[in-house]
Every structure is written in structure tokens, then in C-alpha cells.
Length: 263
Length: 306
Image 1 (cartoon, chains in turn red, cyan):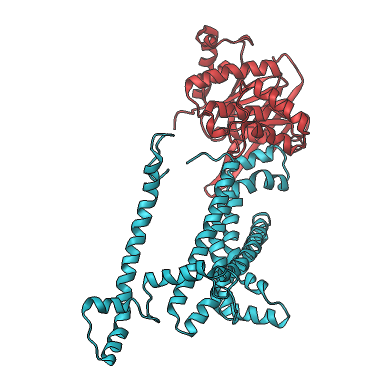
Image 2 (spheres, rainbow over the protein chains, first blue to last red):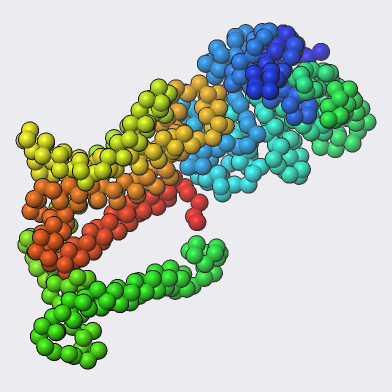
């Protein structure tokens, strides 16, 4: 069980149905999940399983059609208005006409943070993602991995204690991804944030998470929730240990049980 | 740059890229001038033949060609005649003289620029309205399109006459015609430009709970800039056309349009062509100015060098 009992996200009987020309699509069906403060929860499953949709419902980018969801004790809409979370997208989504520091400053400008505090926060968050010295660069001057780190810095800059990450490293090569996974764990340890992390990589999910939510498509639902008993301190080679492989095996079993590879 | 593929910095000597840039242009210019001479000879020949038979002379072919290229009021002036006229009326007369093409160009350019500025402002305002108020997109856009179906040559005199009747004369009526022609490309371009941000960027602004105004300032407006410059390039050329058309029906005494009209009254074809070329030079200068602004804006916004 999670060490800290304070709830961050509570979903009960959550459903979301899209009306399409081919009839209704059940993106989420009857999802029940509690996420506590400080947890690192990964959502894994094949495309169409609703993992991204679930993250978007938390972020109030989609509205659930059934059930309830509470974020930090509020509705997702209120939570968004309170700027309760930082969102990291599949692509860095940096504004190409802004330098890295200006990109990190974007949410701060919108939220009306003063210039002096802005400078301080930019320096702090860029240091957190090891991008010191790249403040004046434009996004196109940075590699894909660095761009994604900048977008993480941007999500961290306004100090929301919830971080929603939608396959942030999906477009990066394996070596860069390993490196960023390691850095993300350090960042998580340092900042004590609650992180919801969508991925379709089993090793990534097992390496990062305190809990892994396995999902399955048509309708999008939760198949299995796996508690990880790996230590919080995780060097990269933990991925060769039997404990790690046992958890990975259980994730794979869960994915198979959802018939996710049948079609 | 660009023309020769993408050589690394300092790889291609600058001469090569200059030549690569100008050689094609110069080739086309030479071809046009050659074609122009051939056309001038052909089109002026019938008149010259009549003239020669009236005079009872039958010159040899070379003399005849020479005659077709030196008529005082040719059907089609030869390039050197136009060039000579341009030289005389641009460089040898005082710019304040009524014969100076610089003076007439300046008159036309001033109403072009005023009309262009008003048209751009109007176009941007309409585009902002259309992008933010869905009802406007349905109700207003068809009218914007319809406004451009009206033949300007027919409407321009009415605008000038009506405005003169209520005491508005001078620069403004002409500028309004430029406005009318130039707001349209800006509206169309800016509607597209303001809608150009990716869904992901719009979602991002939503996660910040950014207001529509903030989203506009921080995202939509900067994202629309490439579209803005593309559309004002068209708009500035349309403004010039509008200003010249605005000078035609009014009996205006100054401006490239009045030069064109006076030249055609008195069959001063060389003057007409010289005025046309002066108008083209104005157009080129205006488009160049827009391009310079675009490059400067691109630099300020960290555009990747091409």
C-alpha cells in the first residue's frame, strides 16, 4: 500500500463514451482508481485502451460521461482553474519562436508571476532537468531529448504538485529514453510530486513506477493494478534483477489477459 | 542560399550564390527585352509602312526596323524609348516637377500606404472576429468574399464621387479603395493564421487555464505571423492597384493613374509605358519592404536560418 495515504486522484465508476458516426466508442468504462500523493503511477496498454483519455480527463481536457473523478479534492475543472497540475505531452510542444527560458516562462507569464520570481523559477527548473546553459537557445537548436526535458521544466515551473505525462519519451531513441528515465526518477525523488505517466513500454513502466495500471481496449478498462516492491533507489541495471523481471512478467500477463494483442 | 541546395556555412563562396541568384533573373529579363523588341517592330510596322508609302520612300530593311523603333507615338514603344523616358522623368527633372515620375509615384505611394495600413488593420480585426466568434464565421465571411466580386473599376468612381459630395477629397478616397482591395487577403490569411496553432499547443494553453486574450497574445498571434506576412505581400500589391484605379476616374492631376490617363488621352504611349514601369517599380519596392520586414521579424523570433 502507498506510504502516504492522502488521496490525490480518486476515480470511481468513471466512464467516457465518444459518439462517432460508427456508433459510440467506449474510451473508458467503469474505471476505479485511487492515486495517493507522492505516488508514481504508470498507465500501460495498447493504443485505444484509454490511458491517454484517462490522463486527459484528470486534466479536464476531456469530460467524463459517467462516474466521478476527484483531483486534489476538486473537480478536474476546478483543479485546472487552480493550475493544480503540469502536463507533458507526447511531443515537446515548445513554442518555436521562444527561447528555452521563454518557453519555461510561458505558464508563469500567463499566471501573472512577477519578473524576479520568474527568473528564479526558470533557473531552478532548468537546473532540475539539467538544461543549465541552454536558456538562450531556440527549440530547433536542441535535440529531441533536450526539448522534452525543457517541456518537463515548463510543466514544473509553476510548482503544481501533480505531474501528468503522456508518453513523454515515446518518440525518443532507447538510449536517450534510458537516460531521461533515470533523470525523471531523480527529479521525482527531489520534488516529491505525484506523477501519472502514460507509456506503452513495459520496462519503462516497471522501472519508473510505484504502481502500474494495466489497461485494455474496447472498452477501455483497467485489467490489473500492480504494486511495485522495487526500492525507490533504482539504478538502471535493476532491470536485470529477478524482482524487476517478475513485475514485468506480470504486466505482460495482464496485457495478454486483456486480449490486447489478439486483433 | 537556398538556390544551390544547402551548403554548409562558409562552404560555397558568396560569388557563386550571387551568380546563382541573379543569372536566372537576368536571363529572363534579356529574353523579355528581346521579345519586346520583336513585338515593337511587328506592331509598329503597319503604321510605318503606311507612313513610308505616303512619303513615297522605300527604305531597306535595317532602316525600316530603325524607323519602327523611333516613332514619336508608337503603337508599342521600344524598350530603349521607355528607358529614355524613365531616365528623363526620374533623374533629370526636379522631383517637385509635374513631369517627374518620382513625384507621381510618391503621390500614388502615399495613398497606397495609407490604404494598405487601414486595409491591414481592418483585415486583422475581421479575422480576429471570425476566429473568436463562430457566428461571425458563418454570417460574415460570405460577405467578405462577395465584397471582392464587385468590379472595382465600376465602384471606384462612385466612391470618389460620393465622398467628394460630402466633402471628402484628396488622399482618403483613393486610400479607401486601396483599403477595400487589401483587407480581403489579410482577412483570409489571418483567419488561417490565427487558426494555425496545433491542437497540442491549444491544449497546453488550456492546462494553464489561459484566457482567450492570453491565448491570443501568447499563441495565436505569434503563430499567425508567417501567414500575416504572406497576406500583406498580396495586400500591398492590391493596395497599389487600388490607388492607381482610384486616380483614373477622378481627373486626378497627380499620381501614376493620372499619368496613365493623360498619356492615353494624348496617345503618349511612351509616357503610358513609362508610367506603367514606374508603377511596377513601386510594386517591387513595396513587396521588397514587406520581405525585409518578414526577415527581420523572423530573426527576432529565432527562425531557423534557411
